[in-house]
Image (cartoon, rainbow, N blue to C red):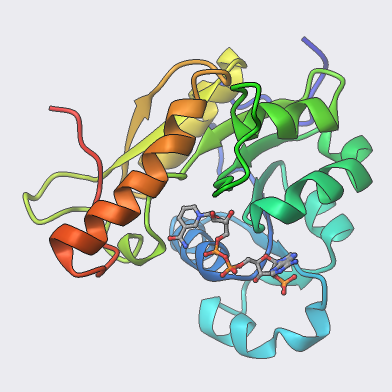
Length: 219
Ligand SMILES: NC(=O)c1ccc[n+]([C@@H]2O[C@H](COP(=O)([O-])OP(=O)(O)OC[C@H]3O[C@@H](n4cnc5c(N)ncnc54)[C@H](OP(=O)(O)O)[C@@H]3O)[C@@H](O)[C@H]2O)c1
C-alpha cells in the first residue's frame, strides 16, 4: 500500500475534508462535518460566486477552486453530477491519488455497461491504486439535518470499497456525524448501491410523496 498523508485507521483527530461541489449534497455533508468539528474546504468551478452558500453552510469553512480544495482535504468527497466526474478525476488525478476519496455520485442513466460500479470507474480514471470508497449514495440530502429516523434509530450509510484502512476510516467518519455505517462490500459490489438509488427515488415518490426522507434499512 502506498504512503498516505494521514494514517486514519482510528481517527485520532478529525481529518480535514475537501468537498468538490457546492450543491445540495455538498451543503448537507459540509454542514454535518463542520458541526462534528472537521475543517471543511469546498471546491467550486466559480468560488467567487459562492458567498451565499458560504454564509449558509458556515463561514468557518473555505471556498476554493478544485485544486485547492483537494490539497486542503485529507479526505476528498466528490459531490458532482456523475457526468462531470470523469473529466474532473482525470484532470486532478495526480493530487487525488494521494487522498482517501469518497465518491457519492450516482450514475443515473449512465451506468457503465460492463457491470462496473460508478466508483470503480472513478478509481480507474484516477489510477495508481486510487483509494476510492463509495458512500452516501443512498442518503437523501434532506436527511442529513436529522440522521435519526422516525423509529429513533440512526439512518444507515452504505459504503463499499477495497481499501481496508480507508473503509475503517470512513466508517468512523460516518459514525461521527450520527449515521450508522453499513459495510456493503467491495468497490465492484458498489454497483448494487448505484442501482438502489433510482429505486429509492421511485419508491420515495410513490409511497412517501417525494419528500426525500426515505431510507434503506437492513434489519
Ligand atoms: N441530492 C441528493 O439527495 C443526493 C443523494 C446522494 C447522492 N447524490 C449524488 O451526489 C451528486 C451531487 O448531487 P447534488 O444533488 O448535490 O447536485 P447539485 O445540487 O446539482 O450539485 C452539484 C454541484 O456540482 C458542481 N458541478 C460541477 N460540474 C457541474 C455541472 N456540469 N453541472 C452542474 N453542477 C456542476 C456544482 O458546484 P459549483 O457550481 O460550485 O462548481 C454543483 O453545485 C450527484 O452525483 C448525485 O447523484 C445526490
